Amino acid sequence: MGWLLLAAVGLPLAGAPVSALLGRRPAAPRWPALVTSLGSLALSVAAALTFRGGQPGMQLVSRLNWIPALGIRLHLGVDGISLPLLLMTAFLAATTVLASWGVRRRSGEYFFWLQLLSVGMLGVFTALDLFVFFFFFELALIPMYFLIGLWGGPRKDYAAMKFLLYTGLGSIVMFLAFLVLRFYGGTFDLLTLEHTRFPVPVQLAVFAALFLAWAVKTPVVPLHTWLPDAHVEAPTPASMLLAGVLLKMGTYGLLRISLGIFPALFHAFAPVLAVLAVVNILYGALLAMAQTDLKGLVAYASISSMGYILLGAAAGTGLALEGAVLQMVAHGLVAALLFLAAGDIHELAGTRAIPALGGLLTRAPTLAWLSLLGALCYLGLPGLAVFAAEFPIFLGSFAAFPTYTVLAAAGIVLTAGYLLWTAQRILFGPGREAALLPALGGMRLLPLALLAASLVAVGVYPTVWYHLIGPAVHLLAWGGGAR
Image (tube, rainbow, N blue to C red; front, side, top):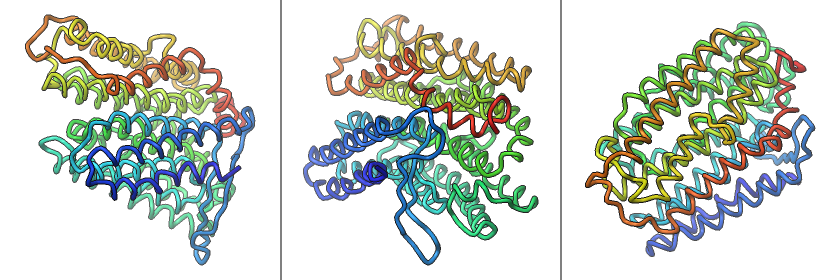
């Protein structure tokens, strides 16, 4: 059944040129994008239904020769770590197409890049060959650069170039590390490299290079400065995918490649990673409190939230790692919802400035309630997705790093403070001229409603996710796991 993954990844690639060719009619290119995104989602769900839960190891594996002379194969597969991220990515790709329904300017190019971005994102979470992983990793960067640079805000050129320079540098370092692994391991095959012994100096050099690449992508403070600029200037659908999926490519690489190939070295590095996690959590939350721009607030909140994933990875217990993987899914969904809500508010009210908004609950009640649900999820309200992820992270991390876990928990207090304060000003504050909003149409509400429903579904019934995630992460765990 490996063809399911090939089809899920390749379907948007088939739809991208069709959208480009239909660009002369502004409304036409969105239909191939919708069909391919829904098709990839259906195939991803079919893969999940075929997947044998409760079993570790890769499933739905496919191997096709790509560059035989170099031993490079289109080697795809999923396990309990990558399958939830594949489902989340396919779902967000579909909702992003719906959120882009009103795009008319250069729509053929827009939906071409959007579908090409989907190919890269889906490919990263299924690739089991390091060269193929790098190919898809880079394929996701190029469309995001054009989406920011062509459809972004007033400072779009600066933001797009900064995004490309930072992430491009990280990619170069990552590829050099992959070449070293190929030279010493004799293959790009990830599953083979996980059982290969490397000289200690090689381990140290490759591990450091890979961590730099993941740190830029996640991003880890102080390598985070590209993210707020990219988010603020990016069009709303690009912000949804940037926060929802592209940031997870860094933490996924950290678990799949760095921890998978160098478990002992990762264990030794864990205390440093825990410190960096706490810095991300607190620094991001403090900067979020100072923001007056809605998208800027969500951008810095994302930096803070990614710190909880790093903390779970550093703790290394089975429970903490389970929570870290689910936090990737939960944060992807809630960040997409909040960026979409911020974009809708900006388009309808003409501003994202928090002091200029007020009375949203009475003037646009559906948008307001869905935004409030996203804010409550972000701050960890029980019964919603983020709580289902962060609670196991704290429980699992306390045994390994009690002090750092307590400090990280303070981030929840800060998050609750700035989100509730912002909600009070925007939703319940006095009405202002900027808040005299027109009605939000059904197509605009649909992606918001789908994202909100997904947050409730994951939060109310997280067991199905942990049934997938548990066996895979316990192979990697060292504090209470099998490894």
